[in-house]
Image 1 (cartoon, helix red, strand yellow):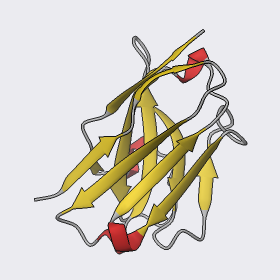
Image 2 (cartoon, one colour):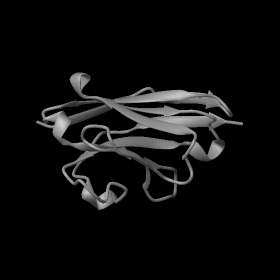
Image 3 (tube, helix red, strand yellow):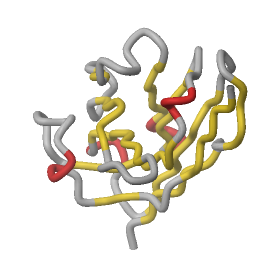
Length: 124
């Protein structure tokens, strides 16, 4: 059974940092590209960042570029999202997701495995 479990969310002040983790089980982790998406109240789920299956390629939304860093450790079956210089607009539930696709990693519908999400709240 495939399971993606996020952790590391919480309350942080503007300008602070958080690191999210997502541990995978039930899949051959190293063969999947991984992505992070987020959903704020009343808004659609949006792409945040993605990383290819061996970590050679990363992709970011314009809203987080230069502030967030996605990385992965295939030996630990874990993908990370380091979030720096947090803003109130970063407040959302953050989801990790897995896909067999090699392209289109920013596309929501290309992911078929999802975690349950972790709440990130940035206070001003």
